[in-house]
Amino acid sequence: MDPPTAYVYPESFDSVTVLKGPQTVLYGAGNSAGVVLFERDSQRMVDGGWSANGSVTLGSWGRNDQVIDAKAGNPDFYARIGATRSDSNNYEDGDGNEVHSFYTRWSTTGALGWTPDDNTLLELNFGRSDGEAAYADRAMDGVRFEREHAGLRFEKRNISSLVRKVEAHAYYSYIDHVMDNFSLRSNRGMRMLNNPDRKTTGARAAVALAPSERWLVTLGADVRDDQHRTRNGVNYRIQPWQKDIGFERQGVFGEASYAIDDARRIVGGLRVDDHEARDYRPTSLTRG
Image (cartoon, rainbow, N blue to C red; front, top):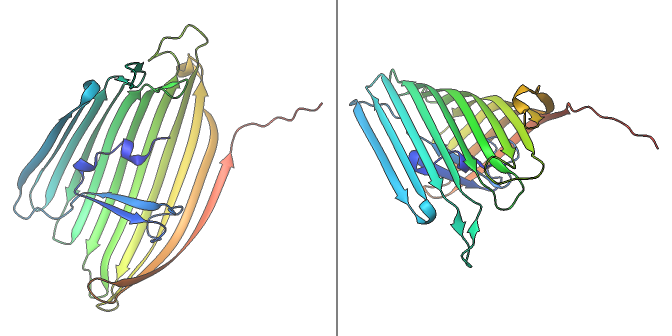
């Protein structure tokens, strides 16, 4: 239910690229609304050393955000760590009424990289986050948004005059989410709790070819597997998980770009995906 921007601070990335509409086939299926790429600089640290940046933002209703990001290394290895936290109290509407809306969220990230030369990168990245949110527009609040992720990325650039770049990426993500109607609000009625979780694994590999100075051709494939489970009740911790829905996807893609001049280019692509969705929930038939 939460967009990716609920878990990332754009400030902690080196670049954010927005690709509007279905104008590329390189980054998965179903991107008719567009693609947003959050990227960090992976250039080799030729001189070595360290760098850090951080910020604090304050606002009304006790709103406070903190962000810190640091990187250190040498030409062969680097390490990067980051942390964010955001917190706010209930706000008041135009009539001065307090609205049930407070929240807190935090995240930590890290990365270890190997850069043996200017054109090679191998990186392991990982992170954890959690939070809670009081909702004014629904009967239950979010009391846990626990998330963990890990990824392994490889890049090799300028292999030959034809092969500009080879890249591969494998990733894992797990979200454990709890919503209830009693932890963050007063409740004298029936207590309700829902605890879904979701595990996502996937991989992507691509090669960028430059047949001539004006042409760039990218070929690749990607896979993704999503498994969703749930359990309910106030004593949910002792309840068994019930697998309910699963999604699997495999895709291949190709995209060619021709540069007319420095400001104009023509892009064409083709993508083929195979999707499979499974409903693991038991079904029952009632006869009248």
